[in-house]
Structure formats: structure tokens, C-alpha cells
Image (cartoon, rainbow, N blue to C red; front, side, top):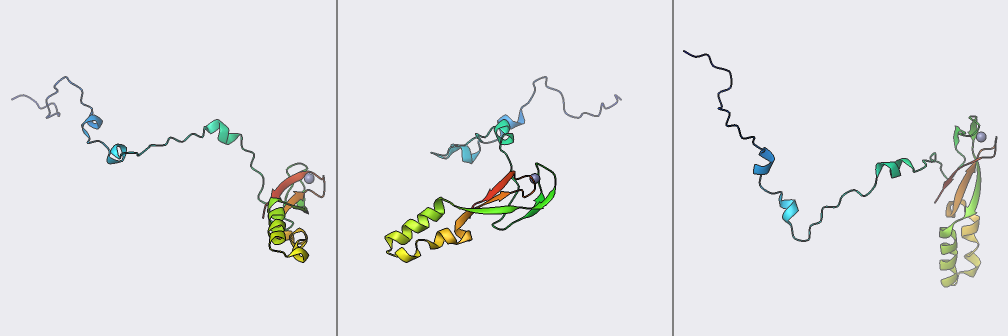
Length: 126
Ligand SMILES: [Zn+2]
């Protein structure tokens, strides 16, 4: 007789909230379990200066200061690790070996500079 409206379920007039009918998440009820929110704000992330990846050896790249294609000039400088190795050698009694970490490039930080405009590019920490 009557035409179907296409909606077989009668409308009760009360909105339903399916997420309230779900059982509680077991992760949330574990004693001592703490849900840690990510404290890093997006504006803080954008403030981090990304330096180009450089290795322990001179690298071929485009200088961001002068725009020239360069092979970086590397200056090796002692790092905290260098001093720690020397200190360890001292404590072991290897006095003759103390100078070795200061002579080995792999034990030092590699500062990369542009040979064209002399601008600082980045550092490689071993
Ligand atoms: Zn340059």
C-alpha cells in the first residue's frame, strides 16, 4: 500500500554514539601504564637547522652560501671523543700512544668548509 521510504529502521529521535558503546581499551586500564603524548611542538621541529650530510672525507656538493659546485675543504679537530680516547690510553699506561687519536682523522671531528667562499658547511662527528 504505502511506499517504502528506503529507511527500514525507525528513527527514534535519540542520536546514538557508537564509540561510547565500545569496551574500554585494555591499554588504558593497565596499572602504571602511562599514555605519553608527543611533547614536540611542530613549530619547534621547524626551527631545527638541517645541515647537509657530510662525511669524514671531503664531499662534493653545492655550496649553500655561494651556490658553486665544490668539494669541501676538511679540517680535522679533536673532539670530546678524541680526548676521551687519549685519557683512556693514559689510564692504561700507554703514554706513547696518547698522541695517536690526535693524529688519526677517524678519531676527530671533520669540519667542512667551502673552498670558494670559506663558509662553514657542517661537521662530521666520528
Ligand atoms: Zn661557497
